[in-house]
Image 1 (tube, rainbow, N blue to C red):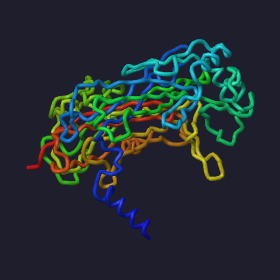
Image 2 (cartoon, rainbow, N blue to C red):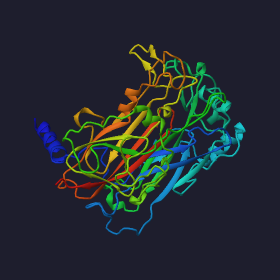
Image 3 (cartoon, rainbow, N blue to C red):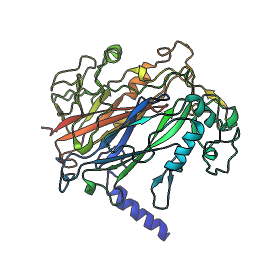
Image 4 (cartoon, rainbow, N blue to C red):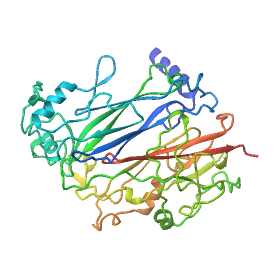
Length: 447
């Protein structure tokens, strides 16, 4: 009984007393929101550019200003590992293979020179070269080659055909019960580690500096399969109510729009590589519009980095992403591990398209009022694609429109005094593709 009372007191202290408790969509402190590899699946001998979406509160935000801004720049440290990172006794992520063992591995397999494992870049972006032929990685996934034992490192694993210490992507029809020697892997996973020390560590909770994030790059294991492309994000638009202060009602409905025009007339601006470190504005692209000037592709007003679009507080606002449906790519060899299985392990449906997952973030307010949207939305076109017509055959316009639309509830001035709020949306596909976009709205008090 006393334990229950104590638990109730703790929940009341941290939950009921703080409406923002456990709000992963609310941006209040420095965070690594996403990491992108471009291209997502580099072939042997080619490089991919890694970049991170690092959010840091602007110094103008009340209560979020750095005590001594500008004295320490944001620092970055990039590392990678052939195996998943493990936690050591100091709660640090450690690669199970050191540099000497990695050099022996590459020499034993004739794979060429690889990017150094630890701290191979201290810049905001990093380049990583894939030294592994697809056929070699295909064999490693199947347990055909004892990679670690070839380097003289004991693994306590058979060298051929029974197990593999590596993380690999499997096509549809192969679940975890399929013997590894019988698999036909379609991707080899390596892990990227990024350590970021923000320019104002004082904004982080105790024990959370520096920031650490892990990201998976999927290297190709079959030369014949087309490589993945990152999704396309062209901006965030306010579609209702109008930003001129005319509010039809508190629960304003989205403005009707022509779906074809919204999707076919997509702009070319993609700030998928923009870093928001130090609260800096993102890169303005050709889709940027002045206040009150509607976009030609979407019936609405694009949020730029200047806060050109004013929105009144204390209301629901409909927002929409400018994303082409082709960001959900048609799969030549369908399926990944997230195919649909029942409790008996029977395959219910095979993915013919990539699954898109959208994560919504904001410095103020919340998402999903009245059951619309939420902090996460997703899209998977027609699971079995009965038409078999390719990229357009399984597009469900209604489901796609729901995935790229949301409702943003703006806060009271007493809850959030700053005059602007940034919205960030990150999209991920089921093969490691990542992109993001962001914009700033100016918040006005209701008359």
